[in-house]
Length: 282
Image 1 (cartoon, rainbow, N blue to C red):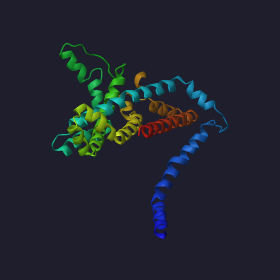
Image 2: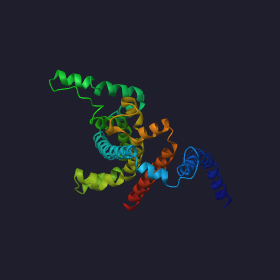
Image 3: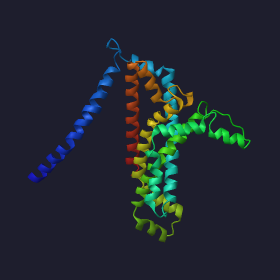
Image 4: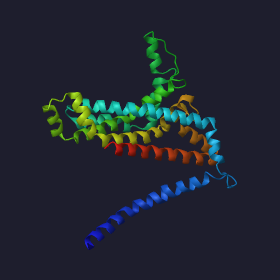
């Protein structure tokens, strides 16, 4: 009994530094932001729900929130599905470690270098338009300054983050009991049936991790968008990160605080709903 108590105290001591770090650098600062969201930025007077009403009637906030939600809903399903397909196709490849390194290579590239390359390719006078003109297929389209900017940014996100998705899928696939797959094959189950009824249910944990990480990373695309198109890009790629940056430059701290609380609550609700969906599914 004493040994069990000592183990519990030892566990608490190991967790204490991490807990204090989260408390000091995450929980308390967010609590202060939440407090400031109900105050005016300059006079510190109580403002009630005024700041929240202000952001929900702000056209820039509505545009940024709509674009960010659209970006998330388009990119995450594409990347999760594409990563699974590639991971399944890689199942029988030799020298797997080398292939994994190649897929993770985009993550090691500096963001500034990636942005410059994509800008050189998709700029109005970039390489893509040059080759299209040589092939007699038109050209001269500004992919970054037009409606196509959204798809350029989505392609950048998928290209850069697809590698870790594939690696996570591969880890989940290799963790599935091979005897189960073999037993299903012996029982007459086809390849699609083995995938749907045996493999996919055992990948539920991997799917949850990949979706959550991809969801959080989809809100970190600001660097690429900012370096390619600046602080005020085309409307189709004006994200929440652009909005927060511009509000910070203009010292609209009251609106920033209210928007930060709203975004945090949205993230929390999404993750809790996703967790509940996974738990209810078995």
